[in-house]
Length: 260
Image (cartoon, rainbow, N blue to C red; front, side, top):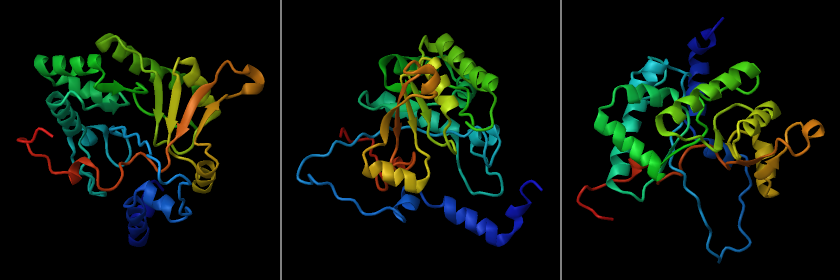
């Protein structure tokens, strides 16, 4: 059967309409309008510039890397362009930072870099401007994958990073997995990760967690067996992994002559 259902025009339009909305917009359709009790006090907002790079979804890894269209979804996703833009922008301004998660596309990009660009990127990693989180080869599914595959996936990515930069990521970054398992959280604790960032959770459960201030918690997977031995600090983002409307890179006109 494969993807035959997508050939139906109505189904295709429904899919495109659904994914045309940000997860924050989808969530706001059913979420109550919340007001802070202390509106007069400053609110600290944390922005984490990052890029989510699927190694496989609508396109092949090579198509995602180059930005080639696949004929179904008009998605100009070019991992190569992202890496080049981040390298350029962070080199311009030492105050800027960026987080990368999965290693598959990073390895493809590094193979094609000049020695000068490789050195620049390595310097950005050393200075902390480039923050590599997760560090797995790709982001795995958490429901149907085998333990051995999940361990090998993380091992390959971490071995690559340690060989290139002498680093080991400390934060797990699973922002687009469709459901999260205790088994994965237990493995992440075993990997030595100190925290885990997630975004997908059933909408009504996420709203309830937000209202009860339970989006951040210490996850103790299989605690009946392991007690506190496998605990990991966990945070679920309110919307998804997209940036807020109006502050994305493409929404801001940057002038090379400005020092601001």
